[in-house]
Image 1 (spheres, rainbow, N blue to C red):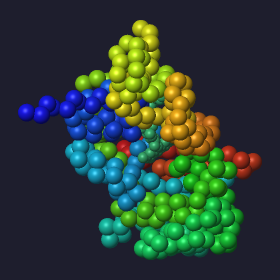
Image 2 (tube, protein in one colour; image 1 turned 180 degrees about the horizontal axis):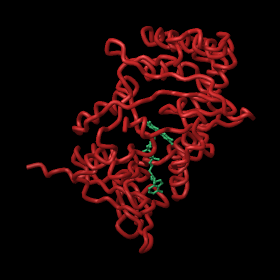
Image 3 (cartoon, helix red, strand yellow; image 1 turned 30 degrees about the horizontal axis):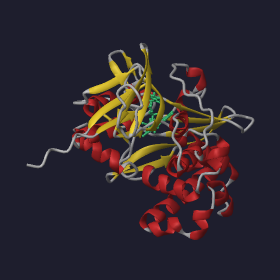
Image 4 (cartoon, rainbow, N blue to C red; image 1 turned 90 degrees about the horizontal axis):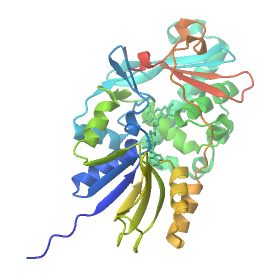
Length: 361
Ligand SMILES: Cc1cc2nc3c(=O)[nH]c(=O)nc-3n(C[C@H](O)[C@H](O)[C@H](O)COP(=O)(O)OP(=O)(O)OC[C@H]3O[C@@H](n4cnc5c(N)ncnc54)[C@H](O)[C@@H]3O)c2cc1C
């Protein structure tokens, strides 16, 4: 009889969506998984809240089946039910409303209909201009969806979204107050970084998110997703920060003899060096680079990985959970699920998600 191959042991660092998913599928595939999370709770749900007995996902965790096919399949695999979410959008500049849309279901298709269309005369010239540009952009994005090779069109593929809007003569109001702030809010980045996004990536996003089947969320909140993904994981170490990862293969001390990877972890009781056959770094790229650089390893593969991870630039973005109505549009009639506000200086955008509205409460 051939002996059973030894079970591979895998360390997963980080318990956000990426880490939990990796741990779940590795465990199902017969690996022995140890999941490390520096926070006191599973990362994917750590910022969520319970308000008046109801679970509120923080940050927003909405998805559309067309843009998130893998997530949608995974929710189905886990038996997580989804519910419709609202993703209506309002945009203001220097405190004055510029433009907004509401999602309307037409023959089963969810269409973002600009507000005020019913009484066309009520649309000011600015709103009319932005509406015309929004319709143009949707049309271009839908065309790209029907003919995906156009996304790779040499000119579009080379352009940033700011260059594309300029070349196609979109109005400044639409570019500066609507689309670029929208990209900044969705990608959690500055206006300057949003303007540099590849045009084809933005068109692809708009085509698949803004039109089609409705924006959805996990009906029971992502805590249900976390529960399902973590089920059966034997070794989950909360409050344990990984401080270095390095190649093993020798006498690394502690439990790391003869292993491929050594993970150094710190918790309230001190530091430990642990050996594994492999490690999944499910953290942000800058953290992964720091962990790999803290180890004593070298070699061309590590150098390549560090180069790739360090090529991802990071900016400071602040996310607050609050109940401060003063950051919402002054007129409550202009409140939407997502409220983008560019400031008078034009240098900053604030995106406020009205979570009651998103979740339909
Ligand atoms: C305001 C906002 C709104 C968003 N809205 C949506 C949305 O509607 N839909 C959507 O799909 N996405 C949305 N996102 C994006 C989504 O939240 C992220 O894409 C997702 O959380 C990334 O998951 P991740 O597992 O890659 O990373 P993270 O969630 O960042 O997980 C990394 C984990 O690793 C842990 N960690 C880090 N370093 C260490 C260490 N050294 N040792 C141990 N543990 C460590 C961290 O504590 C964390 O728990 C939004 C983001 C923001 C900020």
